[in-house]
Length: 168
Image 1 (cartoon, rainbow, N blue to C red):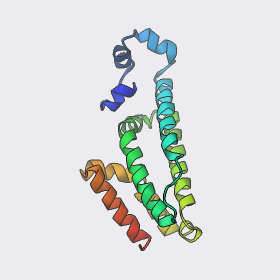
Image 2: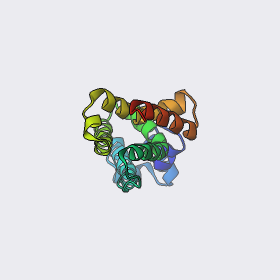
Image 3: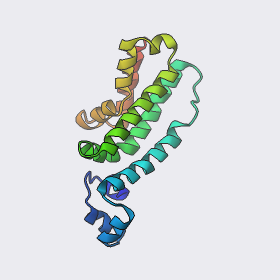
Image 4: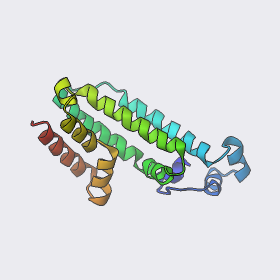
């Protein structure tokens, strides 16, 4: 399933998963009772990889530098998860698990951002919400897909926007 999604198939069926794994369809459903449980397992694998990246201590000392480091980290994470996120987005309306996972990851990302900011910035709703938007997967995805930027250019745009919001 992970290989199929990584290759760009946002909605592989059980038959495709079985074929790729070189097992019978019944074998897939012996391990996973339905497609929802298969997506759940895929999400756990991806979340585990992401947590490793997220839990790394920041190298930068000042809060401004940590925010810039956060842009770099998130760009790497978003590039890695993009195919899986597109697949999850395609199933979000049918999957309570996927919708819950999206909400949980967004909340965790907000908390990480909040911890890196000084209190006066974190409490400023206009600045905090703008930063949260700029550093979201959705902003990254738009820059990469709809605006056709390469990862380097997308990071530069986010860096410039964040600097403007924070007046540095």
